Each structure stands twice: as structure tokens, then as C-alpha cells.
Length: 204
Image (cartoon, rainbow, N blue to C red; front, side, top):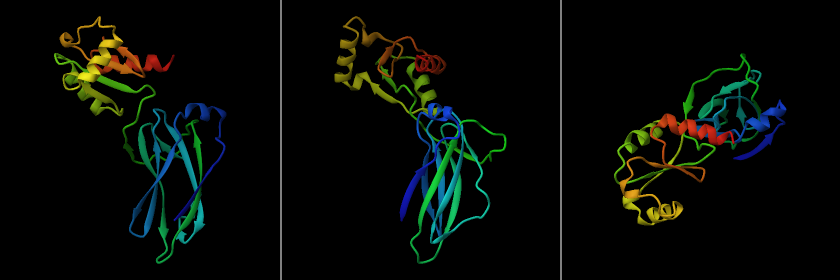
């Protein structure tokens, strides 16, 4: 199957700035059909319109419309019907707009996990009493994150000691150490504090 991605100019100049990660189009094969989905790995919502051209398949003749793709979600855009015994070849034009319209179609959106603008890493001291709640909240959130248990990773523990110039007693800490994009924090006690700090760091 041959595919070509033709990117059109965004409808508004601000779109290029707001869209930190390009909207991806992924395909899922189902019997005699090919479903195309938009994957939005940004926090922001976008309206997306896809136009498909090619051979050896059939598609609806309805005029393409913008479809709302919420942040951190996957949304079905279009399904084409494959012709029996023939190899389909298609290209698509994708228009992405951050000027959201009330006329955009709303379809069911499947939540996905995304990386925040500042990567989140949680270091768990052996005596941490507040880590479980924070880690569970992160696991339930839309964000991907990394976790290291210091009691099981001596090398990581030594690296943190060097980062703090051996001024912090890691074995006695009862709160997690959070790394946001390379910056260490020791006073983030819950998920709300973490998101607040993450938003603050993103605005810098």
C-alpha cells in the first residue's frame, strides 16, 4: 500500500505555534475496510479535516468536514472501502485548525497517554509515605511518566546524592523527589501540586 502525506498550510498563523506536536494520522485495518484516525498528543483541542484521493477503494462522496480532536485523544476521521483483490493506493490532505468551530463534528474520542512538555520522573525514597497516592494519581492521568525506586537502584540514588551535593538524607525522606524536565523538586506532595508546578514551568 502506497501512502503520501500532503501537509497543507494551516488555516491560521497561530496554529503552527499552538500545535506543539503534529497531529498524526494512523490507520487500522478491518475486513474490507481501512479506518483512519487522528491522534492528538497535545493538551490543546484541534479541528481536523482530511481529504483522501487515490485508486482501488471507495469512499463517501459527502463533503469533508472538520472533526473535533480533543487534547490527548484519538478520534476516527474516515473509513474507506477496499476493492476486492486490488491493492489500494491513497494520498491525503490534512488541515489542522486551532480556531475551534461550533460546526465541527463531535465524535467519540478515545483517551491516550501523552508526554507533557516537561518530562515527569518520580524518585521514590524507601521511607516515602506519600508516594503511593501521587503515583496512583499520575497513573490515572493522561500523562506518561517514569518512576525509580531508590531502594532498588543504588546508582540512581548515588546520582541524586551528587545532584544535591550530599546535603539531603535520601533514606529519611517521606516525600517523593520529582524531576520536571531536568529540574528537581522535593516539596511536591500531591498530584495537584505537581500539575500546578508543571504548568508554571511550562510558562517559563
